[in-house]
Image 1 (cartoon, helix red, strand yellow):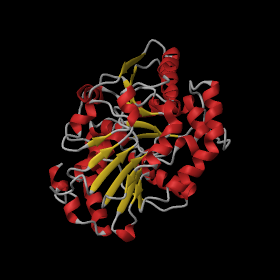
Image 2 (cartoon, helix red, strand yellow; image 1 turned 45 degrees about the vertical axis):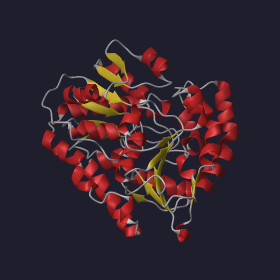
Image 3 (cartoon, one colour; image 1 turned 90 degrees about the horizontal axis):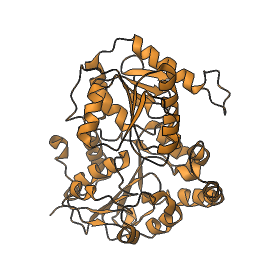
Length: 390
């Protein structure tokens, strides 16, 4: 079978639902028939989605299962991923927001090729203060993170030299890669599944946000803006900040926890607008909401600069930065004003959908096949027909 496990591999940090990096890894695996999928922790539902691929997890998975405390094992990930010996593979693609890029592969001069799809340089190393700000991480945990940060930066930078080719998920991440690692990367936006999302004229009036509940995602701003405007807000997702966010919520804010795909698509169809209150590396969920024809209200930063066309597919807002002493209004004020601006506008749902289609699965597959062709990858290793199968 083309792309047998002896020749190709996909390496992913972990598989916890639902997340953009996991979706990227699954789509990449679909391009490499029979590729072995290697990761740390994996929730059971992903095995079905990766049917046909051998799966290798690390020893802690067999002992603990897919524990929600996976972030607490931070010191163990670098040596495990850094020790992965994949030099017997002709093609390795890692999907990495932290560790997966560190796998050891055969040099390109000896017939190997390692392409690393980078979601962001490691946040724990390069953006720790933002990651910890407003979080529920304990004081000992914060101290430990700051103590090991210099080592993590050195490790992250040194292992970023291992892949032969770097691909960034957005222009913003490409710029961060250049700054942190001194390497160039090309941009291939993540594959956003729009095939089962229809343009919807229904509007039940509520605002929507769906994300892992981490402090840097700034869901707190969305909650405070909803409280101030007395607007209904539905928060989808789970994570370590759930309790603190619930404590902020007024009577118009509800939490659903994690939802299956069908339930989330239903919320896209019924919402009034989707909110992106913090900086996203790319942001797949807001593009899915745009697939339903719904406008997105987003911070003017990160991936939103590439996905949200201001005035066409939504509204971008600026917020005051303590670091830059910006003249923009405080974040909650700015977000609330942007929501009200979106309320006053008449959006063309079909135009919003057309904007979202720039980031569809077929585009992602085509760009990867083009990359393989440019790099001279053996065509027996990948599905050159994948573009027509979306």
